[in-house]
Length: 69
Image (tube, rainbow, N blue to C red; front, side, top):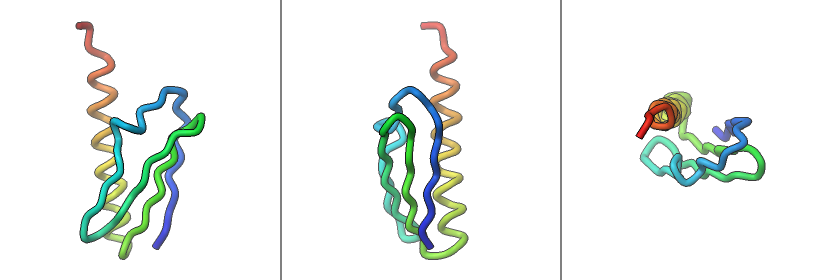
């Protein structure tokens, strides 16, 4: 099951998101004016695991960017 998640973010945060590989899915992140995450999942549960992983990373990145250090 192959899917692509496209995030229209001007900033290159692809290295913060990073590629992932597990038993349920493999993913590759790239930036070309937008973030593209190519996901190859074994099944729907694997796709959900990949999406949850990236959504959690995005929440962390967003909260860090709001800090005044």
